[in-house]
Image 1 (cartoon, rainbow, N blue to C red):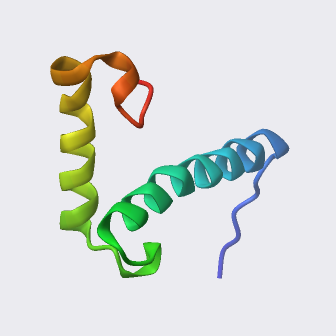
Image 2: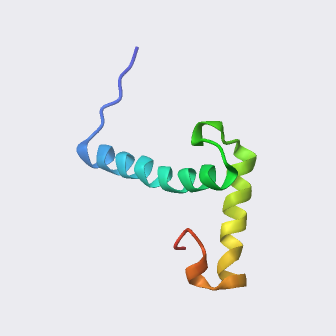
Length: 67
C-alpha cells in the first residue's frame, strides 16, 4: 500500500475548491427543487450551460456565476 503526502498548500487549495463547488451545487438543487445529493450530471451540466448564456442574453449581473 502506498500513501500520498499532502502539503499544507494543497490541502488549502482542495478545501477551497470543495467549498466553492458547494455554492453552485446548492443553487442548482434549489432551482431543481431537490437536494444536491440527488442532482444528476445532466442537470449540473445543463445548469452551467444555461448560466453561461445569461450574461450574453440578460447582462453580466444576471448570472449566478461571476465568469
